[in-house]
Length: 457
Image 1 (cartoon, rainbow, N blue to C red):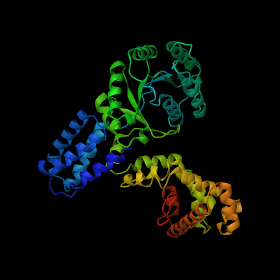
Image 2: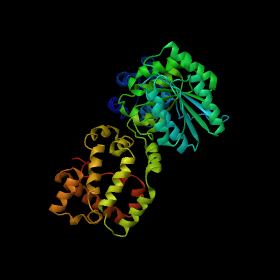
Image 3: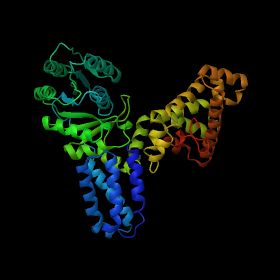
Image 4: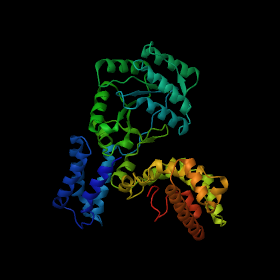
């Protein structure tokens, strides 16, 4: 997300970071470029105007003139104002009500409401330790009810059955009653969407809102619709007392106009953003971290949290001890590392959060894609345990057997073996320097070593 905007803003701000003194004259061109960058990112015009004016007022004021490095101070101001535009800090769900806390999900058809219900259920179960029930009040699309039932089973949420013959209001009332009996902490209601905003849709969801008095009313919107997302959210907000917004498909949005416009246009915070198709791909929205990523400064906090959450620490410690004892880094170890990296969103998912590396994420996308990692894993899986532990055994006939079994080519296997050797050398060096354990607890061990390139090169 934000690749295009990051690239444009980085170029725009490059010329001003070295300035010894800032004046209205020498920031004029930079602000013009920043303005164009935001408009190209499909940020709402009114939002852009307010942002540029706020930056201008602060940049020619006292805080810059007293700064030791005015150029860097200007970048900080841009960062602060971007954060302010998106809402300053993450706003959590307010579930401090008599259980069950009802979360009503609203939005247009195709925005990803049903998938978001499942993602949110999983988030609440795993992160907030809540018992969650889900129900579909979308009686116009029977497939939506079945889809939610399937997703609920996947994430371990209780599914309350409903059918297209029932009235939405009856479904929701019955679900609330059942949630009380089952002592569910949270009930998430998936409502019907339409292809466009219409009176019937609004009347129905208003009726549901009045009936259940939800703790949270979240508007689910496709980030790729840009400032239209903000305008649609505003229309919903005029009919419903929204408490927040969930941006979906933000991983596919390179512009970021929705994220930068929604808060200003609606006055409602973005609480979550969908970052992929899997039910784990839902992140709390942190404006300060997003602003940092937009300006190419990375998002180390999110990366650290993700590592803490997804990395297998026991495997990391085990490998660290093994290498420290002088044992070889074998292909089973490499497979573990590939799986760890895959759980972190691959190379591109990590680069996007590293300071100064955001622009590289897109550049390596074609070289370090998931297919290449799957190919490498398939090759390793086609080997015998003995071959994985001792790659030197791999002669011509063994290589032919492995590539036939994995549906790959000999050059794919040779490339894998070359990368394994380079990684083994790096591990050996790290163990001598005593930094192996720290590296494995972090992320260094999961990156292909320098010189070998990314998988597929």
